[in-house]
Amino acid sequence: MVVRQRSTILRQALILISQPSNALTAIRLVPPVWISHNFKATTLGMTRKTMRNRGFEPWTFRSCLGYQHFVINDNNRDQWKKDSKKTSTATVAEIKTEANVAEKASALVSATDHGDGSIERFKARLVAKGYTQTYGIDYTETFAPVTKINTVRVLLSLAANLDWPLQQFDVKNAFLHGELSEEVYMDLPPGCMVSKKQCQKVCKLKKSLYGLKQSPRAWFERFTKSMRAFGYHQSNSDHTLFLKKQHGKITALIVYVDDMVVTGNDPEERKVLQNYLSREFEMKDLGPLKYFLRIEVSQSSEGIFLSQRKYALDLLQETGMSGCQPVNTPIEKGLKLCVEPNQVSTDKGRYQRLVGRLMYLAYTRPDLAYALSVVSQYMHNPGEQHMNAVMRILRYLKNAPGKGILFAKNVDHQSIEVYTDADWVSAVDDRQSTSGYFTFVGGNLVIWKSKKHNVVARSSAEAEFRGMALGLCEALWLRLLLQDLGYLSRQSIRLFCDNKAAFDIAHNPVQHDRTKHVEVDRFFIKEKLDDKIVELPKI
Image 1 (cartoon, rainbow, N blue to C red):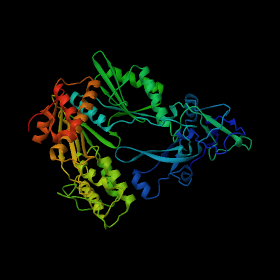
Image 2 (image 1 turned 60 degrees about the horizontal axis):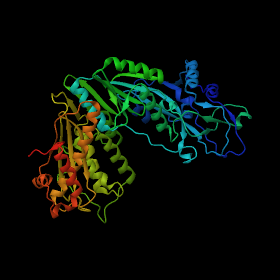
Image 3 (image 1 turned 45 degrees about the horizontal axis):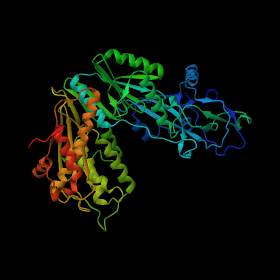
Image 4 (image 1 turned 180 degrees about the vertical axis):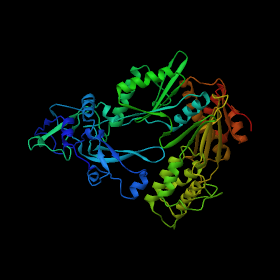
């Protein structure tokens, strides 16, 4: 079977208008129809990585023409026509003012795989060259909120404790539903066979397309509008979390671009919500949550287990560390990295890519938090010693790539506990301290962080105190999130610190000379202690 390019289908999705003489000459286009093309691949069970290494996976539409095992599924052309009409992607209009317009788009091909890495399908999509857009002319605001991984972990912890089912949905062609408020014009796509007269015509977009700078924002605004119309409200702690409470029950939906997870204790509302979203958008029910944000989710009678085993193994394979000698710790004990005057340089780009990919593993690996906070401080000027530290983290991954975090079932699922600590003047370069904290909700670890301070601490008590303030800020955010979910505990937040001087400063209303430089943090913690929001148990 050979890929057949359907230029007639492209023309059906485009509404052409005359190009005025006063318009800018740089006319650029993103045709929407190619987003609906799915490539059915006879891959014989090969994974994405294997296909790429053997040269089987094309990245552009043009390169697909040379592969016999790819074919466009053209059986549902009538459905594509309905989708194009339903989304109202373009409309006939006159260009009354000068406008910068998106350049001719590139046809990109990407693979959609299952959780185990096997290819599900290939899909082609024309993507706009958004870097050609001009601020204030064809786009303004581009910010769109994304899910906080901490919110996801809190929600999964509650689901494990309360036996809530987790259901996953996917929106097909999500960005096509976004409504544009700016005027964006498009040139004809490459490969679109039209007459010479039609070649002088362009399109005006009503809906967003992939690649436009404002597409994520337009889609999220459209989705938020639909959810509010159906009676849901956004959480003040995370705007990607939508909640609905009725009859003493709750339904929660969290969205990351076009991936959604729905949970709660109201099965009827979940079904009604699914039907509503299917009417508003073209949805795909992925069933129980198993793979989300490259995180593998396993549910059992003991609870919910999160891991990134496949991601870790792929990283080891791509870096050539699959056969390395494993180690038991991610960083050497007592290691102090610094920038040396005559250090041996290393590949800066490779170092940054490795650290960036390792940081994504920290979503389910709290044991990597400190090591990654150390090596990420030298992204601007890495040396050989820094690269060796990164290689040691990879060797540690080889020791146990399937490590993760378990959200077990606990009786007290509403309590909040924070454990803080600090490493005083640990940085050799500037003698700044590093603090870290672990936060538990209902006995499950949901938040962890290791962060270098912005200023030098004059004493270990100050370093510990700043760590307490950072941990308390995170705990207060957790308290608001649990309040939105309707599971706020009446118990105070338990904040643990092993430094007696910091403990005394928090309870002491008198200001001493040694506490002037942490005055804001001192009053912040003291206020929460007086309001009985937090308590400091002795260790």
